[in-house]
Length: 471
Ligand SMILES: Cc1ncc(COP(=O)(O)O)c(C=O)c1O
Image 1 (tube, rainbow, N blue to C red):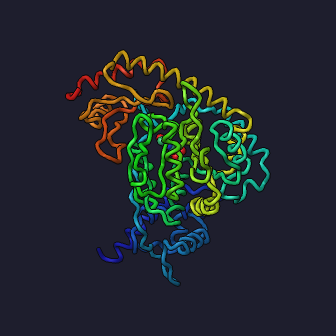
Image 2: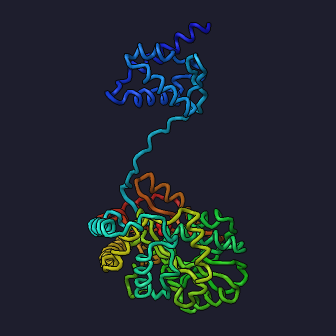
Image 3: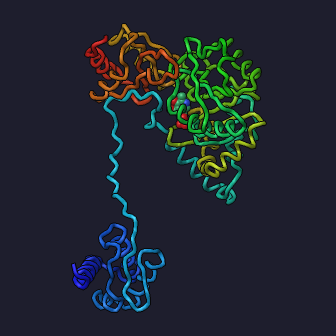
């Protein structure tokens, strides 16, 4: 194409683009800038195209010339146009961005046995709204500033009292850090331990795979350690050669075992002997149904056990607040690490949670949810006894899920896939093993299943299992 023709084409394209635009009264400059900028970003105005001279464009657009020259100057200063004295601007080369496809809305499963999530539909919105309102109204201005990276003192105080009373944790507010749930607590801890020379962290096998990625992401080697009916297997622990171990003593995830007293003692002794740390994931200790929950391991040795708690199970995962109770020796490193990660957690949310805990609303909500989960657990046990009587169940004493063992050799991943094809979300056990052999099973969460839906849901799952060749 000869140059004159191309220039004419560019000009008419620009004019078309601009003509299509309704310039708002009083917003001409901004409208013109936006139209030109987005045409350049999208490639509609190609790099190298020459725009009309300001006088010409102003006449075509019926705007004052100043509107066009200001627009050209602004876009030149942003790098979208190249301007030279006494010549029309040229469109600069701008990287093209592929338009993202719209994200599909998160669909709900017709039958959802998710094992890691509470009933978010019963989040205490009214209590949270009231606590947020009061927090925002009463907070001094300093609350809105950058603050101590350990988190709000009010929340650290409320949490330390709660943990002492409910979980037997021995902690003072100065050694508590407020974090974005267990996940961030584990991440910060791994990073700090790595900087202090740690190389290897152990976890129970089976355990929560996303936590494996957190540990490895911090540059640490991950090793697995088996669990049985009494929780973590502790004989020959020294063969682990680990600098820390992550455990779920109150309710092993995902088998549901409660760590036996002699093992708790042995584990803490191992940590003291090997200058190692025990990282206690106390994720759902509040939901024990048959008796009072066993107290936190941290109470046995606050200098060796780091206790991590979270609002993800008691309130909702979206709240993204958790707390870690740490030995004095780690406080400063963790405070720095938290500051480097995100400069601190949202302050008003922290104050709202502090209020919920201090006023007793948090504990009342937990007690209410415990009742609800207990009824669901009972309904699930009854339904399993009726529809899948041959399958042994584990971990029913606490939490929000039951583990169902499948016969050895059953492909639980294939069964989970088959269930998904039938609209049932149910997690397979075997991918949660760090050690071999992996056992086969299914995790049946009842956090998301209203009581009346449980029996039909189990019947649907039983139909999927009945059609599986290995059963
Ligand atoms: C075993 C276990 N620990 C901790 C958590 C909570 O993680 P977070 O507090 O980061 O939401 C979960 C959530 O699924 C979990 O299953």
